[in-house]
Image (cartoon, rainbow, N blue to C red; front, side, top):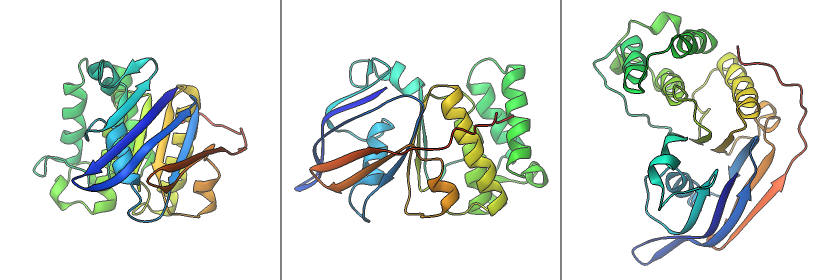
Length: 227
């Protein structure tokens, strides 16, 4: 469960988020919506631990401010402008993250192989990151972000540059992963595409700096294993 109480954020004299509170249960896929400039990216950056805030945020009984290490170990923030080492190949970049994550277990290696196949990345494994398109970089970043099996997944405008097949595969993966691992996925989106809307269990809508709503949505439970 993710619990947010009295969350506020200001930039100098501008109040972006003002005293917002909400609770999201596990096994939820949340669409974060609101007009441009309303604070969606700011919200994700705060929940991802890279932006200061006022208020209280806790995930699985780990309060962010008092237990930041445990909170952040369970969290993955996927941005729409991923940072990666430009002069590594795609294969080397993923392997680096696996090695930095601790034990390079067979499970992580198998996860990498399956995700490369799922996202149709086999032709790019030996290409330098700097030569990849933005859409391909986003796919690589997506794989990297799941290496440590996060429980709170935060994604900022995730599917803008995905082709139709990759989008379908990623949505299937996200849906089954979130349910099977009892995690929470939150992503900001403007898309009305049916395939995206179909996996959302809750809509978190920022109406204004001091008004936010969380609505549950009935979704089909025809889940399939990601692998």
